[in-house]
Image (cartoon, rainbow, N blue to C red):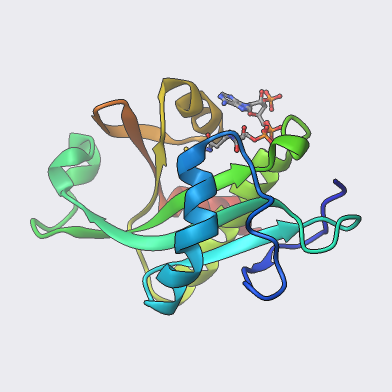
Length: 173
Ligand SMILES: CC(C)(COP(=O)(O)OP(=O)(O)OC[C@H]1O[C@@H](n2cnc3c(N)ncnc32)[C@H](O)[C@@H]1OP(=O)(O)O)[C@@H](O)C(=O)NCCC(=O)NCCS
């Protein structure tokens, strides 16, 4: 699968959601059953990177949404500057690469594109940070080299964050 050069918004009449397999059932099911429904409900937006040589096939996708965190979940040095009510943050709710394309840098590209997308939204309506939920300890290791820190853990799921100020530095010359 040769990936296209840019992510586009998921379109159910153009993109083949059924053939997508990243090896994690939860993330396959989200793309196949919920991504369009959630977009239509106005609660998230899913972007896909299609294949150049397999029409409609999806090499990678990410989903952006909003959520809130409690200031107490942040390190004290950051929390003390924030109000006591819930803090708005942007959420990379899903991010996955097709098994056929894994190990060639598409995970990294998808994350950078998702962060850039979050940064662009943030220019219009600020959020405090970008949050990601790693499905397990191993995937936590995928996010940490890019500057994400652990916010909290729930069962095996690890929630990580990167302050939006740090994200902005990545895309500001
Ligand atoms: C995790 C995932 C997105 C990585 O995609 P990928 O295209 O294989 O990753 P890349 O080739 O871009 O790798 C980038 C870096 O992350 C590392 N990496 C890849 N998968 C990793 C994992 N599961 N855990 C830790 N590090 C990982 C690579 O070794 C590479 O490191 P390097 O830059 O030092 O060489 C992909 O394996 C996937 O979709 N997995 C199933 C779904 C999933 O777990 N999604 C994460 C959201 S919870």
